[in-house]
Length: 229
Image (cartoon, rainbow, N blue to C red; front, side, top):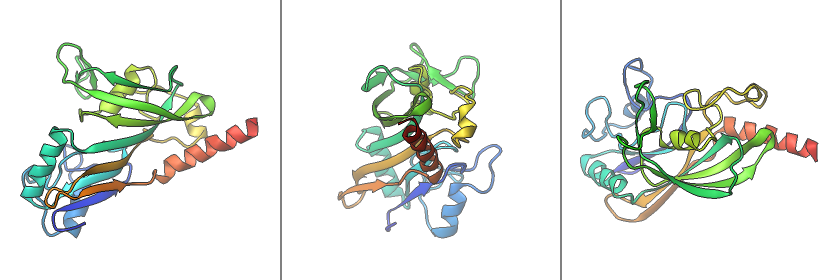
């Protein structure tokens, strides 16, 4: 934290800002309890919020404390100056070790609460991915680098490839193994953000360790690997 921004590691299960059904207990409420000032550009219910993580996604987020920092950060996201790295456990093993998916994303034609790949009416979206480690039960730890920031982008793109993020109740699939290895939410974690400071211009890099529940799942899978060997 400094005079211009706050960087946090958001836990899973925490909604970023007030919305229908979530009027209290959000990340914004916690920030307002700690910080006297947050930027007002995003409105009264979303002070300081430059970007979001889904409720059940954990990891690093940056929040603006004043309007000038907010405007600068918004421009960086728009110009793709900010580098984002995520890690996820996916359900299914890709046939190649790395790749790039560039398919537009828009609102689902039937279920308006979902997003989907929409060739005609979607907005440009691109994600680079790379296998980090193959695990038992055909789970894979993967690194994801979104080039754009569409709603549910990583979840939609991976599901479209046939390898949804494990535990994703909207875009994934049911798997009886989830309970055995402790998966209770979508295994998606924002690991790092890199960007120039919005005021000083100094290059900054923030990292957030994998949330403990994902670490626990990986440890269980590693133990199963050792048993097989």
